Image (cartoon, rainbow, N blue to C red; front, side, top):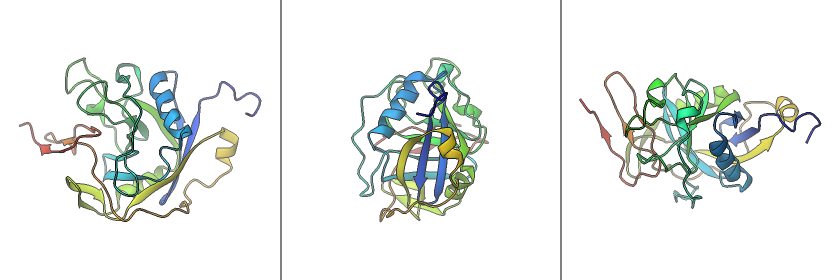
Length: 226
């Protein structure tokens, strides 16, 4: 590692079929979540996974399914660190989970808006929030481009699945000098999957595009609690 960077915040590059995204991780506010994410990165878990949900003005999500539409075998779930982590503002990256607090594994999403309704409120189902553990420091234009890809039904989902598959060709650690020297938006040379896949449950509320981003739900539903 470059001298002087031993205590620097970790950076991760996502090389995708739409371009390059650079994340700055924040272990000071979400140490368990950052360690979990980096373990998946170091294992090569995200290489070849799909971006399986894209909703303009809300979020883009991936990190759980391979090119053959199979869910990848994940590590054991970790606790939700939402009470002390970053807020779900535009450009932050958060972990998806099921409705159970201790269900975070590999899936993550990038916020395309200030999604305050995804923040921690209190230790009660529906209010426990989603842990934002990183910020996009390069390639937000790539994320926006992903969100504008036409979507439709696939698998168990009725909507929001990109019809033009988007793949994370490689996820890797990087140091700030190396990251700054690279172009932020060049598409990766990867073979995209043939189909898109299912993703998280979306619970819609009046005036909001979506309320929750939950991962690994076998039969996702869309409902309005009015």
